[in-house]
Image 1 (cartoon, rainbow, N blue to C red):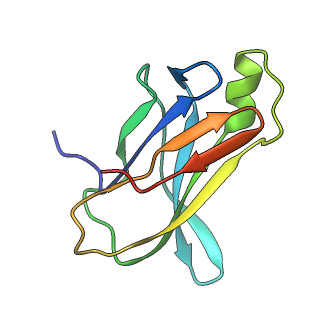
Image 2 (image 1 turned 90 degrees about the vertical axis):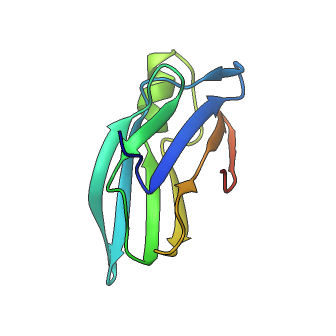
Length: 113
């Protein structure tokens, strides 16, 4: 099985558990617009391993996480109805892992491996 050029996972830091069932979109910048190129949702381990193609062109991309639906599903209020992470891809790089550490009122991210 091949792995996407971009993968992600979400840890709900308020519970210390993976955030399962979160809808995620991978979008590419096309001029001034953003175009959806893939979509998925996190598995029981909070991961999306097959989000988009094996190889992306160099450029700007973003991940959009539907955090409102996730928090509604666990009956928790949130300040952030969505999280959008924009990042740059260099085609020569083998893999990009973009994790999200999430709580109802804060989030952080980093370039993973």
